[in-house]
Amino acid sequence: MKIIVGISGGIAAYKVPQLVRLLKKRGHEVQCVVTAHALEFVTKVTLETVSERRLYCDLFDDGNERTTEHISLKDWGDVLLLAPATANIIGKMANGIGDDALSTLLLSFGGKPMFVCPAMNTQMAENVAVAENLRVLEERGVRVMDYEVGELACGAVGKGRMAEPEKIVEWLEEKLEEGKSMRGKRVLITAGPTYEKIDAVRFIGNYSSGKMGFALAEEFAERGAEVTLVAGPCNQTTKSRGVRRIDVESAQEMYDAATEAFERADVAILSAAVADFRPDHQEEQKIKKQGDGGMTLKLVQNPDILATLGKRKREGQLLVGFALETNNEMTYATEKLKKKGLDMIVMNSLRDEGAGFGTDTNKVTIIDKAGNVESGELKSKREVAGDIADAVERQMENK
Ligand code: CTP
Image (cartoon, rainbow, N blue to C red):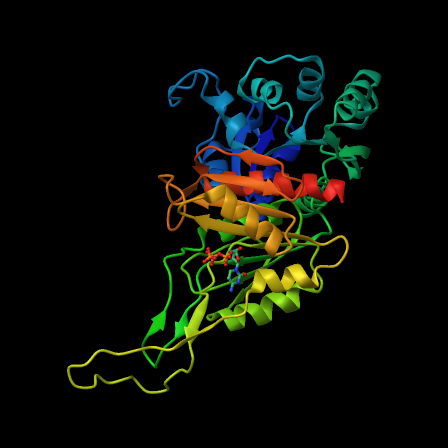
């Protein structure tokens, strides 16, 4: 996840480098944005080193490519964590005041999740205006972390301390999980090609890269689902913590892994390009040429994983297939949807440039069993995965 850490000028800012390191260790990307006063407590060099990104502070910094550069951060970040949040920045945020890089970013970040960790002296924390400002923020959907009670920088003991970095990370991740639309759902995804062994050195395969299936796995994991990704031989990797990857080689192995995982799945999306046929037997040794003659391979049909799951589907389970077509696309895709007992089919046509195997982009049409058709534009595979996940979520609501 891409996290913007906003730092305002309180003594607790000294804890932020540690907070940034912990977030990075958890696999997040972190961008720091500070107020000028924050730099009295923590240095630019420290923050840039731990975040591995340049620091934003001044609206009119010489290093900015454009004066609106800090605003473009709103597109980069998935969430914003304001820590520490002083009474001053809380006041600006609640009242729509933007007079530096951080406060203007806070104004432009609307619609995305924001988290605030207030830190100040007890009298300030108990001030009616501050308490009122925090209440306003909470009403608008901003999550506010409770103050800690303890020894304060001014020597007094009371409420107002910022929580320790470990606790902030735990709180943030817990709140993020709560807001996830696929939380508690189990999703099975198949991806990539299958290899059907001929002999010790040869196989029948196809050009599938696995990119679409991996993009789907990451998208669903990000939405909070527990993903089982059954992957054929491919070069894709995923760092997503919500993805359990099972590597397989042949259609039969994919069938075994997928049918087992389907037992516990709420949703299954089969994007793998499964070989329809395999050699009727596999030679353990390398097959040698026999004189000048040709060679005939006898093929037998592989089990159809999607059709099998369509037959085994229980009430409440949602099954999605893919159809890669070259002609009569809609007709063939709709036929597959019915024949294999699917709830939805994602059709892509090899006639569309930039769609199909190996590319980073895809152009799909999503057809559901009620006959609704949604045609998408050419997009990155990750964006297409987002559209498919949206369609799945809509179907789940109607189930
Ligand atoms: N599929 C599967 N198991 C197979 C073959 C295909 O699960 N043995 C799944 C694919 O993952 C995809 C869908 O079925 O979701 C593709 O449908 P399919 O009818 O197999 O497509 P084609 O193999 O292209 O069929 P045809 O040759 O009839 O066009």
